[in-house]
Length: 123
Image (cartoon, rainbow, N blue to C red):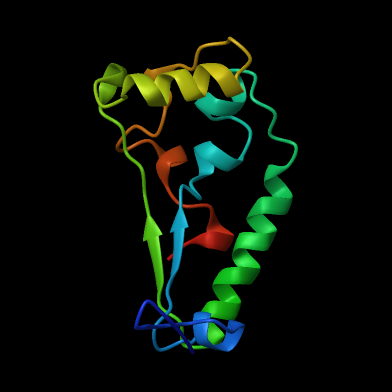
């Protein structure tokens, strides 16, 4: 622990990753976001890196659980027809899709099986 401006600050990896004060937050590891057949892949996004990302995420989850680190899973569910999509989110989708739009009616819609977590990264 080091002191900065009179306050104790974690400094070493052991301090920063102490299982008693650390959590792993898993965001968007949903089938439609990481695999073919979802609105993101169907809109032309490059999904080639997703199998490796899913594998690495699953390894991180297993390691966190083995170390007693709490794991929190964030599931994104959108309202129909893009009603919950902010302009910034729409721009991001448009940008990473190289100018192709995403079918917002199929993007993480509540009740759609593709909105469920991918099995290897499930809660």
